[in-house]
Image (cartoon, rainbow, N blue to C red):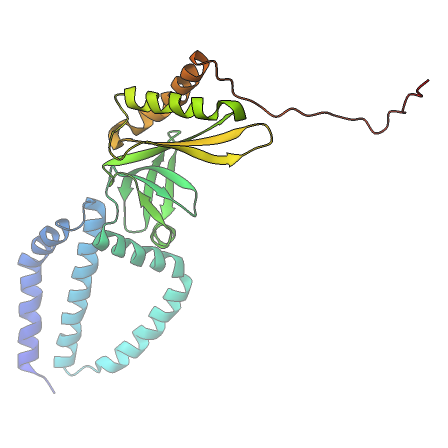
Length: 260
């Protein structure tokens, strides 16, 4: 039995989608998705879904058994989904990344379990690309990226630098004072949060001190590259040497010399 109302609704829906739908959807999605390629994919998926719904309404209104079509389509979809589980997983993870937006292009991030860190250069539906510190480009599947622990280092206003220095047992207090004065003089080290200098560990050949200092995020790498050399110079000026382990090697195959 033909349903005139259903046919009218389907035709009006097709016309509205054709005239206004694509541009309206694109503008709405671009507000939430920064990557134009990913936004275009979402626009196409949404359009095809709506076209399919209106097509089903039209067929049902013309008396075609939609249930039989859906059952056949369901079997085909099931077969395809088994063959493309990874692609589907990456696509769904990509959608959640675009909705949640834990990172954006230009952020410096660390992917903990993958042991990868770098600057985000692109976020697509199926993968996220990072420019690593050595200049290489790493493309991470979104299913891996989304399920991993992501540390967005660009969100912090300041970042901490941790430095371990081992000094002689007799120079501990003197070394702490030298490090404290250096932290106060360095213009790139923030006064708040306050620098921390404390005994971290005891070794056979010396005491390990930990120095925690904070710098603004934009200056972190610059300070990180030079601060250890500067500290070594300050310790040398104060006549504080850095001890190192010594080893005695005994050759067990060497015969013992007789004593007289």
